Length: 344
Image (cartoon, rainbow, N blue to C red; front, side, top):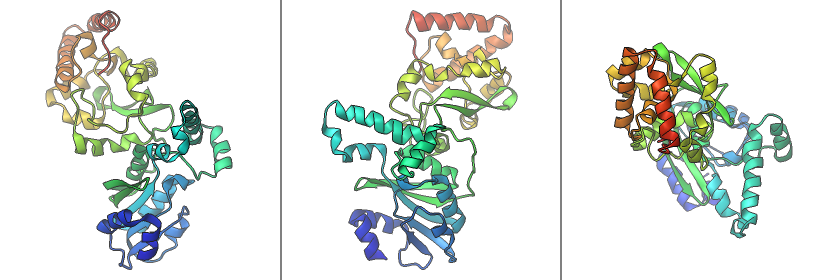
């Protein structure tokens, strides 16, 4: 088994895999497959699984990961590999041809990345490709693994492939509504602690919501109050965020009565638990808003400034409940148009 593995992945990758699992153990399963049945049909108790077939070739990625989860003992190690978007660009010779490379990569992104996620085009894509050359990002694959009950141990690149080492931690999430399309819903804290689903245009790779704890454990928060060094953000996502374009769909939440035009930001339960208790209590009494107080007060987007501006807004709002939002709305409009205030 070791000689075949070494031949397929090379010395560096072999040594990396060997650091995490015992290849000589009868409880280690090494496969080269896209079929979950080849995992499930093994009757031995398994402590480690290595799959050499790139995830890019999987037709049903989550179903395969779920099959691995079911087969592994709790705490068991799973190692898989895949070609990232960046690695594929570097591999293709067409990437050295000016102009043509840009046109080709746009086509490749639309066909191999977007088409598998769009109703109607999905069937055409899988009919032509059989799902064997999917374009995948690091964030999506890692997010899928976490959604399927794994904890990220490590990942590293060798010979154009990103190798992921994960550990079975729990049962799969079986989420029927992952953040997948261009318009998606995020779970956020609403009034009285109620969880609401806030609409946004996508600025992150699919399944990114499952990686927040991982990103925070690595880098913590940036001055903007958002996760630092966040590889989940797409290249165009930063532009959408800068001009608040990604937040326009929140008007749907306003129409539904879950949010209002001006108010504290809709935040995740994880972030809510990290803010001071007094601010948690003040926040819970109000609906979140589309335009945050730091914009109206022309403050910086650092964590301290954002939290302080929210505290000031909520205190004023409790004192003057009927006029505060109107004043803050026109202040924000002035700062955005005249002072060119932009999102943090």
